[in-house]
Amino acid sequence: MLMTITMKGSHTQELGYLLHKNPYRAQRFDLSFGKAYVFYTEVSDSRTTAALLLDLDPIDLARGKLGAKDGGLFDYVNDRPYVSSSFMSTAINRVFSTAMNGKCAKRQELADSALDLEAVIYNLPVRGDKELVKEVFEPLGYEITMRESILDERFAQWGGSLYIDLTLRGKLKLCDLLDHIYVLIPVFDKQKHYYMSEEEIDKLLRHGERWLQAHPKKNTIIRRYFDMRRSYANKAIERLLEAIPEKDTESAEEQITPVQQEKRIPLNTQRLEAVKNAVVQSGAASVLDIGCGEGRLTSLLLRERQIRKVTAADVSVSVLERAKQKLNLDRMQPYLSDKLTLMQASLLYKDKRFEGFDAACVVEVIEHIDEPRIPLFEKVLFGFAKPKTVIVTTPNKEYNDNYPTLENGTLRHKDHRFEWTRPQFKAWCCHICEEFGYTAAYMEIGDVDDRCGTPTQGAVFTLQKERKDV
Image 1 (cartoon, one colour):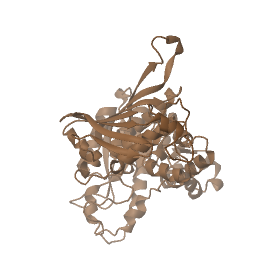
Image 2 (tube, rainbow, N blue to C red; image 1 turned 135 degrees about the vertical axis):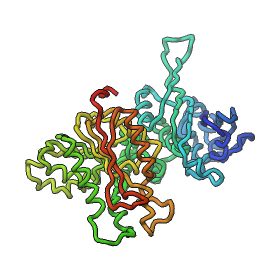
Image 3 (cartoon, rainbow, N blue to C red; image 1 turned 180 degrees about the vertical axis):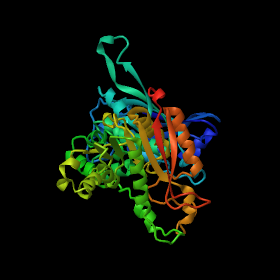
Image 4 (cartoon, one colour; image 1 turned 30 degrees about the vertical axis):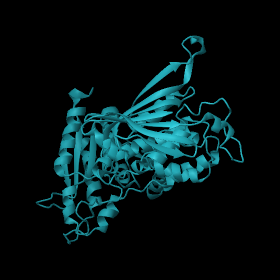
């Protein structure tokens, strides 16, 4: 069985550093079930390809290892040595373990960067689930190609093969690519080679922690990963939902004492008031609060008479439950509860429920998204949902100098993936306007520093009527 990983761009020979495998020397690894070989099929400045080849002895698979008490796990006639199965997934973890952890002492900045990568998984067993391949990989931002073949050219009536060669292309970190493949190959393989215990739950959640909780097919992925062990699948789903970190930038900011010591209105209060006022000024009657958290902004919007519909969305079910409690939904007056809809949804995936709103609010949310996935968010919100008004706020990185307990380069919150300077944010806003047909008015929220600006920066995007078809 074979898998290749290709890096494109410039200085692509550094793929060897990232994989911790010398491009100019083939390597062999002895595994309990066979041998794995790593070699490079091409090495150049613009394109480098590494191959992982797994060699299994079909006789060992059927009979078991010499001297073993038990027999083998498979019939004498089986596809195990030739298809991308759980054996391949295990080999990836053993051979590329350091790369999967995102560690590279000599090129750590490269390991942390989104790269132009392509992976080919040969002979993936899909057994009629070709649409599932798209549903599983495309939400992760991949462009996919499936090459199918017939069983035998001489006997076309036998139909197509149960296996495909799958090509994944995307711009992402290498560790993310390896984690995706490692977790998702067993989703399509119904004949795993190892005994599955509860430790498998920890393994799945560890390798899926950066992406699985927001995946629209997470339940399908988890149930197929555990095959017939429904109890393990249910425990994994429950733990996944509980593990979603609560996004609470207000507490993080308020824990840090600014240089300015005078009494002031809390930053989060100023931020939410500014967003609410921008919604009212836009004339919106229906509002989508994306990443609503515990519903603080939602509560303000509900009490505006002009607003007749408020939909609060968050990826975390547990956070939505807390929002219900904070909003006192069970005791809310009917004229307010009739306005409100709470829904579990991710801003990284197209969702019909996002369409048709006058305004959308994205308050202190985008900095929690991995930067390589920002284009997905852009397409979902500005390209697909396309509200008339979009209000976005995010921390101003330059203002961090006013927080004495923050070390240089440290982000304000442990769950922030990045923070933008004012020029970076404005450049992003210009990109949104040019790409999707909006205009932008900038907002400054919080105490003003002559050198650093305000702690929160924002923009009110307005859809241009003449470009509604963008």
